[in-house]
Length: 353
Length: 134
Figure (tube, rainbow over the protein chains, first blue to last red):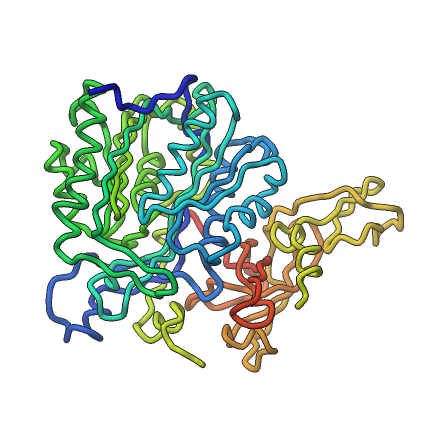
């Protein structure tokens, strides 16, 4: 097999990162009360719900501002603003132009919206690695953000949440964590989809597990580690796409990671599945507590299906930069619980006309 | 359709970009190109920190067209740390009571649709209670 690792021509890394989680939470038991007579197991404790005036644009702006605070660069130094999501507010009109304008990065930029179910954000990160790594640009902003949709009463409604993260990719010498290599594993596997004009996605029920999530996320992680000559023991931390609590726990176990290694990045029990944001917001929570020298494995998963795996090493610049913006756990601690009726209003599930 | 107006105001609306007077350093919002303090020309752009405090507030129950889906909501006069007063909606209040003097911070949020749900989405500044460190 040829070398399938993606490694940039010049070393690159994460220069700044930022996250965002909206204030409102609905408990999974509240959803079970309405739709399941309070019976059955719950995939998470609660999930984050956006307010009436929030969408992927507003949430991306806040995460991008946090990333800019940590990066300590001028907005005009950015050469790209890329937003990955499956809930872009417009069908036609980029999310990224509004985000770029709001942070003052216009007009000398590439801008674009990325889509690949839940891995659109890491897809933008890989592109940013190439953009900076080739020397075409010094800094690129890649965001993964979602206000995920779940059909009322469906299994997905318990987890489909809102949140995400932004990363400024730049030269390794100015990075708080270097992106050493990436590897992507992609096949045509229809485990989850949403057709045009449909409000809610469909999924293949149990088919979403073995042939989709586990096959792709373990293949990307195993190949990356095999080609780098690493094992789970070489990493301080690992974070996987987290559609529910069990999947990332089991994926970690299959790959030889301990519960302690995934603990700080496992946010799904308290914020739900933030889709394009799910694995990378976990990475922000890890970076918030990481020490120089810590090595991190990140693996996203996007239905349809694919997984991007990254090998990351934290540098000594983390010490000064982590505290320059709001930490992910501070957003999680900012929490107001709402009932199903308020949730139905906030998520536009009540038809008014 | 008010697209030209929304487009013209986007910088000040998205990022709280005002002006600073090059003669007396007075901070100006909204931008008006003439310093209200010294009367000289002031066209230097200045991005406000977004930090301020509630000077006064009221809650709207009967909202004007375009804002009705968000009612009831609270509007405040916010005194920015740099000096100017701005009128804006408060957001992310949860069950938190509002008090005069409460520290707030700027966020960019959806204001309304231009027209109905087929129109462009208008984004702009609102203020929320300052998030305290955990």
